[in-house]
Image (cartoon, rainbow, N blue to C red; front, side, top):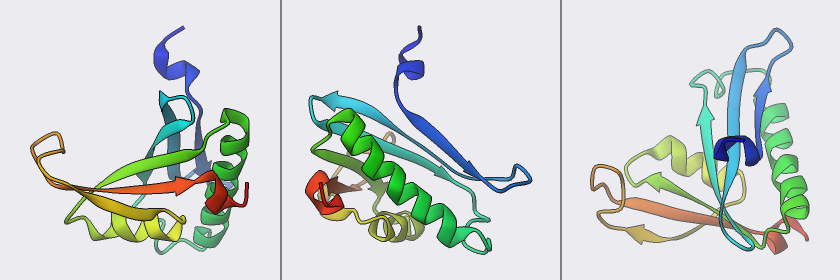
Length: 120
């Protein structure tokens, strides 16, 4: 089994199959998981936006319980405003700037979401 197949992920789409949001989790160490996401540029204007974001929040909570996660974290390129807005919308809190951290030496902002922030 390939490594990627063992890590949880999910795709959120409309009834007609249009993919609006994909996300998943990769283990860092016990209790800490890296969150990744691919988001359609059409999500912002979609009539399904609230429904998708609600489902993504619920998925975080379910995965926190299933994975026994204390904390999820994600990194956003510092100058990528939509990424910052999404992290905050999902309840992630900013923890700091990471200079020379991105794949091309970019400054990234780290966000985290703790299990206790999800009410667990």
